[in-house]
Image (spheres, helix red, strand yellow):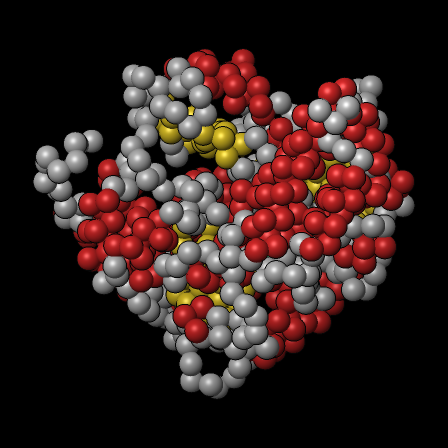
Amino acid sequence: MTAHGTTPHQPIFAGDVLAKLEALYPKYPDKRSVLLPALWLVQEARGWVSDDAVREVAERLDLTPSYVRGVLTFYTMYHKHPVGRHFIQVCTTSPCGMCGAEDVARTLVEHSGCGDLGATSPDGRFTVIEVECLGACGFPTPILIDDDFIESVTPERVPELLARYP
Amino acid sequence: MGYPHPIHPRETPVLSQHFGQAAARTYTGWVERGGYQALRKAIGMAPDDIIAEVKASGLRGRGGAGFPTGLKWSFMPKDDGKPHYLCCNADESEPGTFKDREVMRWTPHALIEGCAIAQLAIRADVTYIYIRGEFTEPYHVMQRALAEAYAEGVLGANALGSGKRIDMVIHRGAGAYICGEETAMMNSIEGRRGNPRIKPPFPAVAGLFGQPTTINNVETLAAVPAIINRGAAWYAGLSLSSPKSTGTKLISVCGHVQRPGTYEITLGFPMKDLIYDLCGGMRPGRTLKAVIPGGSSVPIMTPDEVEACPTDYEGIVAHGSMLGSGGMIVMDDSTDLVYQIMRLARFYAHESCAQCTNCREGTAWTTRILERMLAGEGKQSDLDLLLDLSDQMTGKTICVLSDSCAAPVVSGIHKFRADFDACLSRVRPAVMAGV
Ligand SMILES: Cc1cc2nc3c(=O)[nH]c(=O)nc-3n(C[C@H](O)[C@H](O)[C@H](O)COP(=O)(O)O)c2cc1C
Ligand code: FES
């Protein structure tokens, strides 16, 4: 993370990431359709999508930054701000809620040191957010830690799970 | 099979027979299990004959609406010289639904094969498989399988040596339930916000990139190879009830049952047996209170309605709800329906794309009123207010997300009035006094 305006933006689309972007073009009839995958590439490379990144994506895909921002903000999985080193999503929708998901969410918030849903722990290690149905309702409570999809999480399992993510 | 449980003797494992077998995920493992024979056969068929076979099988959409699949395919224009597209709907985000992920996680090649056959039938140039962003494992499994299918020459410029071109692209979503709605999905693939489009034009006329497009659910497409292999008559014969409900259906069961999981039944299978026999019934000491049989968007059923209900399209309608996606939420007598309905309303309020006023405002207000009731600040008139609001939210918007929010509210108030009355009787004295 850099303070705004102090460090010049290092281009994201260079080397491997640029090669991945270019490999996407032939899959779609136009450049605009590459927008969602391009934003995923940005998030994989930088952890979030900054204003500079929005401008860079817009430039690459012949779109305007405001168009890109309009699409970016529609989709909840793109981070519009930096988040903790490990990003935790916990489902609390009815089927999971009926089976104890709210206790899991509370325990995650407490043990991660985040203090509140949506907040990042002071050591920058975790961000915990509540999400709607993760499509694994038979295995309450499913959580995502980064890209790891973990099922049947109970409050008791939380400390051990968090310990795996230094 | 009742993943993660062994196959129950009363299941009919067609799609799920290889769930849980890691080897079935690989190209070699899939071919050993009879994979890609159906595609080979379909390559030798005229597109219209594939469509006729699927029509005759009686296969209906497994994504929620139950539209006959062969009929949908027949709407695609012929010899129009335009590019055609197939979209595979792998957005699976409807609360209670977790069946498509098992198809993708365990039998990715079944889905690829189904998509390839559908692509031939509708003369499509490319299939876009839209997988919700949270499905990290299904996404990786599908990516690997697709790369293998290209490497093995199943897909590409000369699919299975036929000289025909079959191309597929996996497109990853980024968190938005609404992108499961077919026209929202098309916008999302096109790099736009996921707002549903006004119909007409229907997708078969102007869909993805403005071209003729068909969209089908994962389970629908994965059912196609078996139909081509074993014939329409075999599939149509799989029915325990109405001839309008044929084949097998994956039902994902969650909530207060002893063995939640994904089960495969022949359509028409008694709902009661599904809950008590396959899923092991309620937890000890508990009794059944309510069932939402087809994902959170369908009306709630009472135990009386469940009693003699066949699990199929017509049967569930006759017993007060809909088969929908086949995502079944079972609730026992410990459940406060008002709280659960509020939680579902909050889901819809969170997921509304906000372009239609009745949906944007209606889902938010429904949630607020229910929250207020649960906080002990409800009024008797709130029930009429909720019903009136639900009426304004039904049949008045571009897509049916708004209707879906109203369904549990209306059915809940009508069928589980006691829960609402109990909630209202917990009203704080200060509110009663009008302070
Ligand atoms: C708000 C909303 C969400 C939907 N989500 C899904 C979904 O996640 N998966 C799906 O297959 N269909 C979903 N549908 C239904 C699709 O619009 C479409 O009817 C379906 O994919 C067609 O495929 P089928 O005929 O094979 O069922 C949704 C519909 C609406 C209105
Ligand atoms: S409700 Fe939690 S995963 Fe579906």
